[in-house]
Amino acid sequence: MTIKNFIFDIDGTLLDTEAMYIKALQEVLHERGMNRPYAELAKTFGIPSRDALIRLGIKDIDGVLAEWTPKTEEQPYQDTVAVYAGVKDALGKLRDAGANLAVMTSKRQFEFDRDVVGHGLAPYFSQAIVAEDIAHGKPAPDGILLAMKRLRATPATTVYVGDTVYDADASKAAHVTFGFAGWNGKRPTDFTADVSFMTPQAMLNLLKA
Figure 1 (cartoon, rainbow, N blue to C red):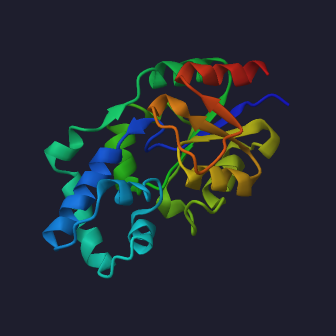
Figure 2: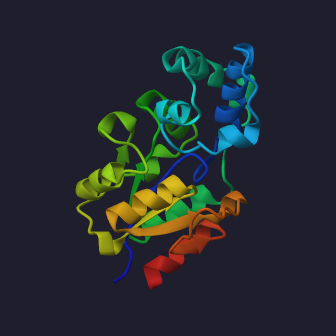
């Protein structure tokens, strides 16, 4: 059956935001006397901030969250954020070809407004699922299932496009195709995608399958 419903992760998929989040967190922890390697922190990239801190064994979670969020707003970190090349063009072509587009992200609403709306991506999507909309974040399937419900989509006609093992696991739990956003330049080894897209334009091939 042809894929006609595309649900997207945002961070590391549509927007290059890893450095913004991880460098800001690294600085917050450093100021608290905790020096953590970037690579260690980056392993939690793509899940809700609170869940990331739990996985990292941070004790004062509320305190770190209260400092981490404002830190990402500082200009040096904001300057690292960019839309991946070719993403807007591909989204426009998918939409014009009749595909249904939605986003499902671990971002909170204010982050969605800052990053997705702020970088001109919001108009491409008919539905947006943010952290406040669901009880359980990735790797639970809740967000994908809610997006499908709003799109009136079926698992057989849906792909979730993401970049982390958390995205892959959520896709599997929701019984949808998982597409890896390979245009971000990463080559992870901790999951296997159903389909990999080396460029955003490669997603258009699913409409012809």
